[in-house]
Length: 157
Image (cartoon, rainbow, N blue to C red; front, side):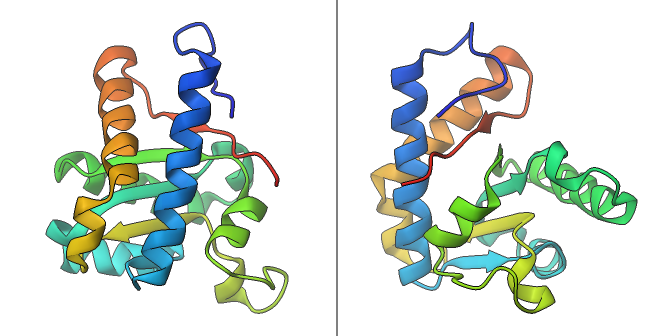
C-alpha cells in the first residue's frame, strides 16, 4: 500500500490501513452495507447522509477526461465533508471489484462504475467493526494533519 505523501506516513501503517479497508469492504458487502457507483451513491448520500460511514472514491487518474464524472465526484466529496463522513481515494478499481465480488467489471455499465463506493451503517455489526474504526481514524488524521484526501493503493493478491 502506498500513498501520494510517503514522507508523512510509514509503509507498515499504510499496509495495515489498506488491509483494514479490504476487510471492511468484504464485511460490508456480506452485510449488504455497500452502495456502488457514482449515481447510486449520490442519490443515497443525498437521501440518507446519516447512514453513510465511509466513502471510497476512485483516484483522479482514473477519472481523467470525464468532466461529468469529475463534477459528480466533487459533489460527493462536498457532501462527505459537510456531513463529516470519512472519505478516501483508492487507485485500483480492479482490486475493489475483487473485494466486492464484481467478477465482470467489463460487463454492463453499472458493474463498471467503481468510481464511488459507500459503506453504510445499515447493520449494527458494521459500526462495531474494528476495520471501520481503523480506516475512519486514518481518514480523520489525514484530513486534519495533512489537510488532504488520503489515497491508498491496494495491492493485488
